[in-house]
Image (cartoon, rainbow, N blue to C red; front, side):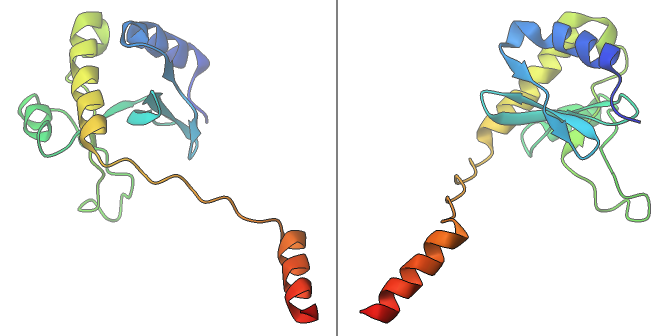
Length: 134
């Protein structure tokens, strides 16, 4: 079952003060991005997880947040995302505070290099043919 449209709308409304948050599809759930940086995800069961790193992880753990562990048979292989603290979804300012921690973690993460454009297969064949004729 995909992310509930009502939950997604509710969450995007709560996060609106941060700026243009987008929620592209992501493995059956949704990612949360701001200015091209992924800072959260929403699972199919409408659970929000926020990005953490070595700087912010202690705060998430101290608040009793649950770490995202998508592989039930491999709980030790979890990802660096945590639920916001209990009750944060009911208090917009509190949720924004945790979301800002996640955005800061996303900004500290190294940016991924842009993917190189691949030449179309026909262009590759033409270049090879040209080389053989030379």
